[in-house]
Image (cartoon, rainbow, N blue to C red):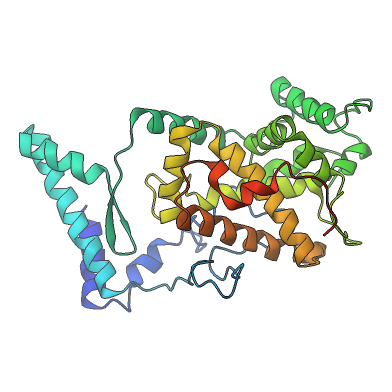
Length: 335
């Protein structure tokens, strides 16, 4: 706690020179440590990974779309807010340890408070939200294990859902490339998102089979000669959503993350359903931009920007309320 105070006080004195923060962001080998925007899992598969900064706007006429670039230094107001919040938590911990009523009240309030754009937002998670968020985070921690029978069965299930009329190939076969895996061994593509990315694909195929088949077989619009690989793109989308929703942080730190808590309150499959929306939205943006393989990462950024806008602007109570949800299950059309 003392070190936190020292760092924040230093920022208050000189907010432009947060040298201690810079030093703490590197490990002993001099490499930057993992942050919210640089997930410890891995970079996306299809292109060079970029952090949340620099996301292009989906609609340049709408200033709310896309995130503003974050700078390394904090404003004086932001740092002061952090300092006050640390003080409250510190005092609350002292009283809480003594068992006093005041301490318990302070601890209750500060435990459900987070800072968002220099404003305090009360986050009082109900038991259902806490449980569903806990389960989702547990799913995120499971890596894909090619030697695990359950994981092998899930991969086989995906094939049967994708190609119900075709014979199941061996787990290592060139035929897997037809689904959009980047090698004959699909297990090598899961490194950036883990087992949940396979679960997302299976959920998509089961719950929105028409949209799944259209995207898998590239049935919509005029396609590029160099298309994005379907399955590998799905892994990237899982990775992107994990970052966008701050699922690897203890408490939500952005408005879109707070909005997601409302979604899982009414739908335990909100993450998987949002994944399906994101995949369909990505393909629609891909077609509208006449994109090619090398532009996949830019389209993925635009997809994230649009999702963030819809989640925060519309105040949707469910994934089905999002405008992009209407793209699912629509009839085949030529764009």
